[in-house]
Length: 191
Image 1: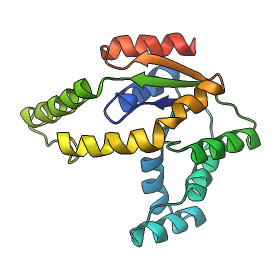
Image 2: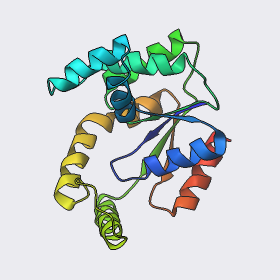
Image 3: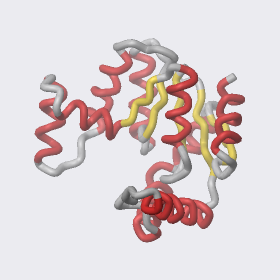
C-alpha cells in the first residue's frame, strides 16, 4: 500500500507516519531524511545531492525523484508513506509517472484537516513541553515561523488537495482529534 499524508506543518503527519511504520511495517519516505542520507552515501546520486547542498542550493525535483526511485526498487515491506513529497503539482505529476514506471500505484491520499489558530497553539505548546521536559524546542516551533511555513503550504501544497480529489484518491480526516483518534481514522481509510 502506498499513501501520501497531506496537511500543513504541525498537523501530525510525522506522528501518524511513525505509527504506520510501527504497526503496518510501511516505509516512511521523508525527503529530508533521504537527502541527508544520500549526501553521505557515496553513491552517484549521493554525490549529486552533496554538490547541490554544499552550494546551498535547493535539490531539484529530478534528484528527489531519483532518490524515491531508488527506494521503490528496494524492499517494499508494507508499502510507502510519502512524507514531505509531493509539495507541488509538478512533483505530484512526476510521482505519478514514477509509480507507473515502477509498477506501483497510489492507494490513498489522506488530508489531515486542521484549524490554523488551533495549529499555532499546538506548535507553541509543543515547544513549551519540549523545554519543560529538559529538551530544546525546534527552531521553527514559534508563531512567526509557523505562519511563514503555513503560507508556503497554502501557496504550493494545498492545490494538491483538489488534484488528488479529482483523481479520486483523497480522503479528509480531522487532524485535530487526539493522536489515537487520528490513527483510527487513518486505519479506517486504509482498511
